[in-house]
Amino acid sequence: MPRRNRPQRPDEPPPLGGHGWARSESAPDGEWLVRNVSGASTTKTYRCPGCDHEIRPGTPHVVAWPAGDYGSVEDRRHWHQHCWTSRARRGPMRRR
Image 1 (cartoon, helix red, strand yellow):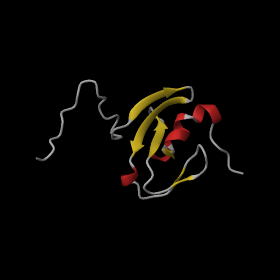
Image 2 (cartoon, rainbow, N blue to C red):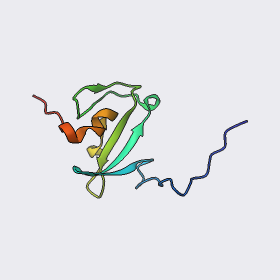
Image 3 (tube, rainbow, N blue to C red):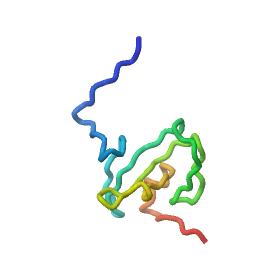
């Protein structure tokens, strides 16, 4: 039997600002829109700003960008999930 699309539950947040299924996060470093990306949907290599290591194609990760009027496509950053959740403890890496 084919799967039916389930109706949106009232406790689920709607898509934010045309950015797909992003969630809003508030942290000491500001307000963010955050989206989880499955490994199956990735085809490019990204560099994580938290650890400065590559995020290879096929690796699940997080895309985050500042919320509000000042956040744009150029502000999006791809993070390892662990690096995103621990960013307050270590901050972004600086390239030498």
